[in-house]
Length: 388
Image 1 (cartoon, rainbow, N blue to C red):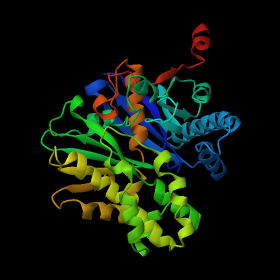
Image 2 (image 1 turned 90 degrees about the horizontal axis):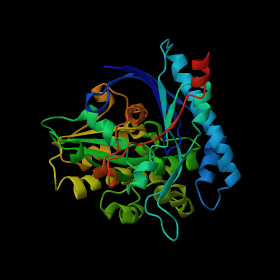
Image 3 (image 1 turned 120 degrees about the vertical axis):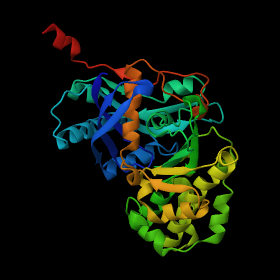
Image 4 (image 1 turned 60 degrees about the vertical axis):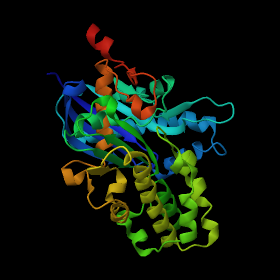
């Protein structure tokens, strides 16, 4: 069974950094095994983070800014690749890099005359040039072309790594957005389904940044001091996305800064706002289970990953909102890494692309077909090397 070494790169809508996972991958398809060698997060400089946020809002975006950010982020993704290789003291031969890029805008359900589409930036040519390897990128586009939402894409890797014969397992990622993958007991790939549950860290992070100039509510310390703003909470519970039937996906367009900024004028206490948003995030997750999953399956286990897994207040709210017989644990509880999970997932997806295998899950994305995902930026030096 062929062994490859790869770097998976991911930067989510929470903009808290570029995750880089160096992995060893053996095989492909259902025979895939993947071992994490090293993981790092490269912080996105505040100035660039603010420009990404401006560029992702139609009212403040500029085409010249987007053009430049595409290359600036390409260099940052390259730096993250270098960082994970250097810190791991990797002496082997890197076979490929798989880069998700940075989502700038995602339109699964466009209005007006706009077309269903998605845009990730962070040009892979820069990585291919400096590291002399092929780079797989632009994973979401083909799923959208095939009629899907382009999200979520991690269910394929989750099926390979977490399926159980006698238990129904839910993989809940809490990044900027929350998304869940449902793996029924003894499932085949087409038995999976997945969807975005709603906000992940996005709303909590926006409020924490506004009130405290901090990237996120570390260890839930602000939420822990807050009390529920009942009127605000009830208003949030009526958000139409919660009632929308899966498959569905969302992003900054529905749960971004524009929604949270309306609260700042109300004169609420900062910690009360952060706690209320934390509780709403937990509700959006568990409400999705109760509406769309529990009528079909008995849930045995919920495995939580992403940055939200490190927020004890959020985890406790989720546990309190679910029946006691459902095991709620984190990736760390199982010996894995919450931070590295999505970067690993894209390394696996890149491996499938290079093997010529489909890796979207139509039952998760609503795609009409199983598709080979991604585009391949070749090693630009390979023909020069061969001619030498």
